[in-house]
Length: 369
Ligand code: SF4
Image (tube, rainbow, N blue to C red; front, side):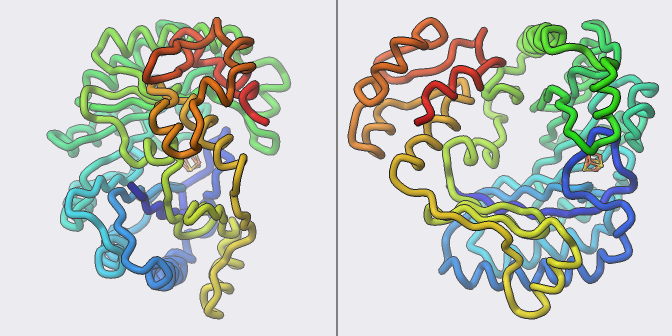
């Protein structure tokens, strides 16, 4: 498996908690940006010698905010230049306040077959407080436009004064709207974002409250037939995100556009997050990488373990042995002793027990050397 990620760095406005590479004031540069993105696609594809890709993820930013002609152009270029498998999963992120029938038709015309909607909360007051541009009614209209399509929705936990009943309402709205997949993320305010001062002032729920909300959310989703397959991701049978699963299996992917990261042939590299710098590099015939490193030896094994333990499938012992030449239980015998109470260990797999998945970082770190 290998994936293609395309970054669209434009949004209508900035949400108070956002630290992604998204630039509301730069939308005037969309034409120039996409011209450069198409050039990068051609150059990257030429360097990959026909490597097959089976997922594409168009994220941002807000890909559904820009004129659909840019997305159509990107998909046409990908199909022309890359070796995309015929059954590829192709996802686009949607802000519910920006979707139209015309856009849905344009996306489908180029083979986009999965949609990811950022609802975040079903409470309009909360959405305003987060500076989201959409309302619950926009979300329901977007779902109407996507009726019969395969779509996912995002929900946030750890919002201002959020109660279990608030989260339950959001999750029920999502589950009743026809979504086949839910991503439920805990809000983790980053320094430099407007919401960080609320966090410092204690206006947001503390960690224990967020953990309780998370447990409640997991139970609510599981009752509705959405099974957790990664700490923040839940899907109906057969509806896991293949693109994300590839990341957690330490698969290869190529990232295109500003701030996009890649992992190819044990090399990880990331493009600049600055649009002007990106454009300048591409127009002068260079890639816009600002970071690049080779991942070798023990680091490969550590990455594999760290990523696999995030998922409910955990470590596949046979795969581990095939990749690294030793049984996981021999290689990590000490760690397995100290962490035993948090783990389910069977003949075929080693995974973090479901009740500890939310605090996985403190367990996974014990396996890092
Ligand atoms: S829509 Fe997403 S990318 Fe855009 S500002 Fe909000 S959180 Fe950031």
